[in-house]
Amino acid sequence: MNELQSIVAAARTAFEAASASADLENAKAQFLGKSGRITELMKGMAALSVEEKKTQGASINVAKQDIEAALQDRRQALAEAQLQKQLQAQALDVSLPGRVRGQGSLHPVSLAQERIERIFASMGFDVADGPEIESDWFSFTSLNNPPNHPARSMQDTFYIDTKGADGVYYNLRPHTSPMQIRYAQAHVRKHGGDFDVAAGRLFSGDMPEIRVIAPGRTFRVDSDATHSPMFHQVEGLWVGEDISFKDLKSVYLSFITSFFETDALQLRFRPSYFPFTEPSAEIDIMFETGPLQGKWLEVSGSGQVHPQVIRNMGLDPERYIGFAFGSGIDRLAMLRYSVNDLRIFFEGDVRFLSQFA
Ligand code: DAH
Image (spheres, rainbow, N blue to C red):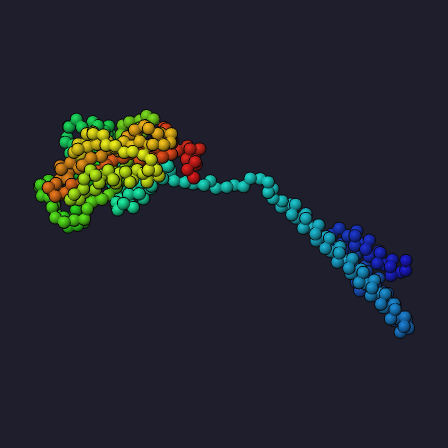
């Protein structure tokens, strides 16, 4: 090994031995620095002949390049090692499960209600909302349910035991039927109808038909697998000049077949009694296929709006006539989603609710 080769070998060994970049730079100075061994050799060339300078110079250059290459390799290796160390210190355990945000969803009763609203809207029905704390007049009297009449006990009403500021008693509405009167009165006023129910002055002029559904919360003193103190109803009302039971049947059949996405069902009217309709009927449906096949299921009360109710809407019953219905939204949701205990809707159990996400 000549001198140059041994210098290169010594440089490599020194670089390898450097374990931090400061050590490496010191080692570099020993070989390539101003008084390093390569520089010393260069200086020593002054005494050589021109020919010798050429060959010796070339060899020194090769050695210098070898040393620089070794230096560069070592620099890279140290940088790499430094990076690895840093990566290990900041290691991420990618096998840990992430913190995911649970997928939210609408409540099944809300899903059913939205579905009902969409279907009736497609048939030209307006969707209305009204107060849940209702006066005695709207909840009962306006619906042809006179004070102290035994028909009031059909609904186990929650009463508020102090009178309102207007001096009358209020209740948590036991049904959505008050919305018939509220909506109709607003509709008549909106179309210029002047009326005064108390004075017996009624509207008998022209106005667009009343066609509305009013879904919402209702309340009764009742609680078991199919009744909850808070539940949901949807009221329907169509009043015009020649609206009859056949319209009720076609509207309700369209609705129920859309709601359950099947034509394989039958609908029947079963005579019944409600103070606000005459005649009155329960609407039953029967599925021709599926798990509930062959059973008649009650889904709604209905009837032709009683003339006294038409009057309380501010309308002349000699000119206006129509039908109304009131269906349980929770019951429709139970049938649609095969839920057999109503209470599960209102327990807030995520294991149940997440199935609708
Ligand atoms: N309001 C009734 C109830 O809660 C349901 C009902 C029956 C509504 C007949 C109506 C109707 O509009 O015509 O039981």
